[in-house]
Amino acid sequence: MSGAALLAPAALVGQAVPCRPDIAALTDPALFARYPARSAAPSRWRAADVRRGWARTYRTMLRRYGGGPADLAGAYRVVGIGCGASAVCAAFVDGRSGRVIFAPALREVSAMTFEADVGFEMLTYRRDSRPPAVIGAPNEDERRRAVSHYDSRDGRPRRVGFLGTRDFCAGRRAKL
Figure 1: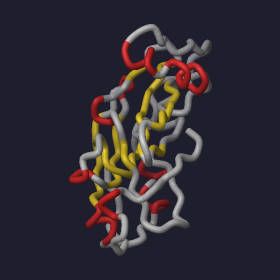
Figure 2: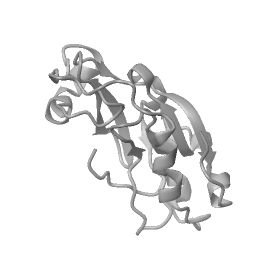
Figure 3: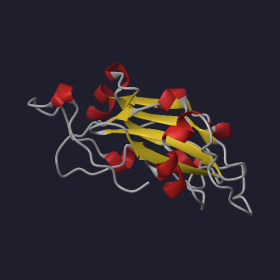
């Protein structure tokens, strides 16, 4: 995914920022290494199947950005679809079958930023690992605003790690 434009969530506009966390530590490669990809890259990449459901709605983006090579868990391509100011919808394209997965847990992620010069991706992931890290509020649920790690077995992310705003402002490290 290329860089997403990030703005402060409405809850933080005009307020003092509680802290400036070390985003690099929160998305440390060692965390990703604990969940290695289990599948090899497909020998032949299948185009995203955009014939039905949400995939049809977002077919232009999926056709444009859903092609190989894999960038998550060895066999998936992540397509971040802008779905509002400072928000992204995540689609996972399985390169083996072309199946497009919209995970209910990550239907929309609204951003959180701390200072204008801090840049990061709302979705951070690696080709050789399963868990994407999500920095923001999944499904605009501000109670879950944090850094969350999801194990993406079979392209269906399930949360396996969570570091809330209070925790990373206190300097704690993400644990999976």
